[in-house]
Image (cartoon, rainbow, N blue to C red):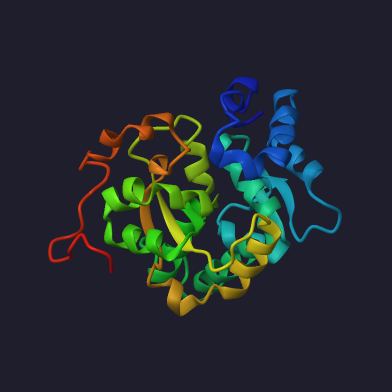
Length: 260
């Protein structure tokens, strides 16, 4: 395999991790296929449903000088390297095909209009942040209020029982790659889900239909140290876990720590 995916490189994935539960049913068999010697793009393609809007291709099919996003839009083929990053990217394509197509269309449209620049514009930057590091959260209003205020004590301790009503789904493939070796400072950029559902297909349809270029250019995301989510990391059961200002940072100067 050209980029070095082996059984050992996908083997460390803990499919029992809470954040991987929505991905396990399809993801674990794909990882097992790769462990048996299949290339990542072949394993993903074998898992794709009949009539899927996108196919997976080896990275070598991407012509030199052609923008990745433009190639996907033009060919409906996703160039895929044999590495963990593209493995998770492929899983997101399998689960969120409509959203990924919408993100790709906006990226390709911006590239067609402005070219590939050294610095991404606001829209492409926001799309990339979510594509790489985003997550979806439906939660009762008090949790969102505390999260936006960075009132960590209220969010994670006072309101801890409310997390049982929340619904969280990771989206960013780089985030999932990093969480293979979890560390406390890892931050996800959460987008507020307005539908409370355990169905990724429903989330995909809702999210894809609501991505507005103007609004998303303003990055409507809220950062959250993802291992602080109750039940996602054993260490956060100790209240002192959140008393770490290097990870759970206070509100910016001028913003109170209250709800708002």
